[in-house]
Length: 146
Length: 221
Length: 204
Image (tube, rainbow over all chains, first blue to last red):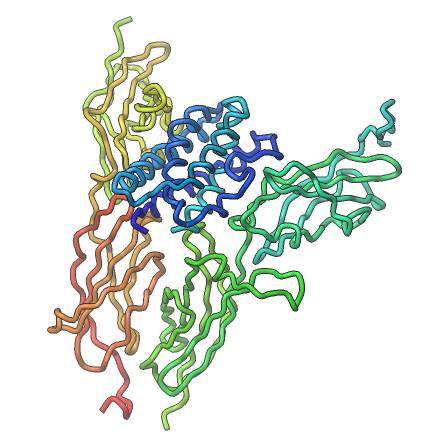
């Protein structure tokens, strides 16, 4: 579509794959999902995808990464790499948003509110680590949508 | 001798060693749970299995894998929605004792499955060889079930095709997105060996190379 | 103890998306000086209180070079710094002047070898890493206007370009393209080959 972020996604995916097991092991809560509750991202209408992606890139940059510091230097460096790559994605999607190629409908606004509610339902560190552990849910959905 | 103890709450106090290395093994989204027997336990250990969809509140028992003595359990049907992610867990029993539940890491069928090589059909004329590639199908519950090619699961799926010229011993590589390849202007009466691999760029997945199919171009008339 | 001087002449060497931080050695006679490197991405500056992240492979090293490729892995502006340690003595941080963004990496033309195997036109390319694609242009000598292009994403030896006719020379040149910085190298030297057909009937 008009907002191409493909190659950064590949780098983000590779960075995440390197720490996926480590991060997901830090999330003991099996019964809750930040991104998928109550409905999977895959249920989002295609017209709303760009807006949700735009909101979620901001969500990860503004809220998630800064609360994911660990005692593991390697994991921290990979999180930094992902966070800085997200800045590029955030910028690209912000430009789309400004050029009105990224319309926000009622459904996407509701969906994003639900994600924020899921996030705020946990303490900030647990919510941040859970969100980071769900990055492949976001990537699978964004890659399927491009 | 493994100590036996019983807690007042009436629940067996699980002191049996735990099953080990509980993990999914997945090929073309046939998702089978595997584990190793608890350390130091001989024969006679039985197991039961449960699974859960990540983000959903409950564990679900798998009746076909209740009180089994094998160390695997096919959860392909239960994990067939590849837009979800899953956990599975195993508990061991022996002589009235039990182990703890031992869980897998989070399983994402889309990224954690291994892709099988494509099927090849190769034919030749005097001067060319034609190759038709077929991507594997996603696992399905029964032969009558609806078939789904992995091409539908991974729209960015491509093929790497290797053609070995047996005379010059040179191997050529082609990367193609469609499933047919014709290599023209070959030497008559020459043997060529073809094999192919699938690769997906996002998420990054590669199959192994298929077995080689060798064929000779027809001789000059 | 006199204060340990901070490392000087800190600079970046970046070629084909491989990035190295280098600096001049701090000379303390009779002592072994060790160095430690840290980096700070734009994210750290704008969202994480300007925090710095140590590179453990370059912590207390004696070399005066550090491979920062794995850490400078986004197309944003990075700051880098290095300090010296001798025993219990530690220098101030020496910081790279300005920023480093991988978009400035220098891209060299790809090594390439063109081969004719019978009537098959092949090119042998070198794997330069996951960030690289190759644009390979090929044409019949004298027909530059009818140039064809093949994009090679995954490098294997002997990539098949096309099938040649008997007689004319075929020429090939290649450049790299790095999508994450949206830049290309200059083209490699052109190489030309001719089909090596046997003299069978249908060639006449």
